[in-house]
Image (cartoon, rainbow, N blue to C red; front, side):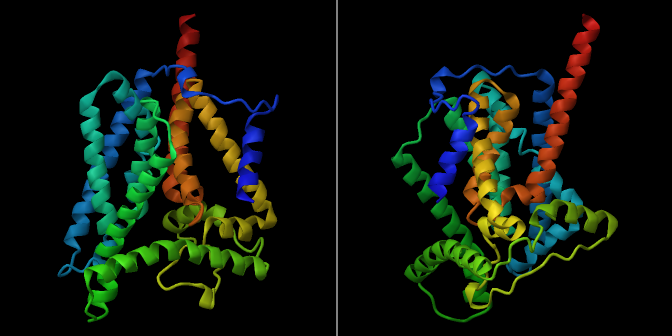
Length: 350
């Protein structure tokens, strides 16, 4: 079914002529970088780096005798300011590609340092996504710049990297909590590895079970996950708490797994119109790819995060999250404001 939906998205992205021709990386156009967008990109990366550094330092102060559960609570100290730590996201691809093209090594050092901080944050605060939404765009832009082709061997290699990353985080947090803080069982290395591997595959089996559950019980149009970013603003700024419907999955819910699954979220929001949603997502994915090859700066900024969103669909809809929505709105506002002022300036000169 998903292969058909992806092909449908590809066909729609080829309209109006519906020519299913490939767009090769070798035929792409060069990007025309504006000095202002580069300056703002650099400033936003530095700002996010500083905010993330403060979050990590504050998280370590919450450690109570090595209990990592207490570190997670440290995020409450930052409130809405925490969103600034993600404001770098859509500026990073622009800055990274420019630095690779112009060989600005000081920018590469800055981005590597940001990655180290985000990796620590992921492990310390159990925010796996904080590192994923950094490393995936880095890989995408690096591969695109050097015209690297994604063969089956590389797909397997990147999957194994991700699996190792998942295992490392599970063993440093969930395993520690379950077998050291809440139990006195004797465990060995082999048990720890097999336990982490089981959790990885159970992660996705769990969301599949939940999808079957919501379809069987006909829970279509019973939620409004797409309003989550609005809910957060109403709750934090105006103290208005919108109560979202919650489902009791009973035996269909594995212990400690809270992700409902992206398709489940689309189904409970839009019913079987989720099929149309998937087609739209993949259509935009292919369109953005074509726009990158035609030299679009805005596509360069957005496309890598569409990759993240598609990879996360088995777990949740990444585009619903505040960590995507508000950095995206901020970037779009800055980008079009710069385009508008540049247009006005050019008009005055003429």
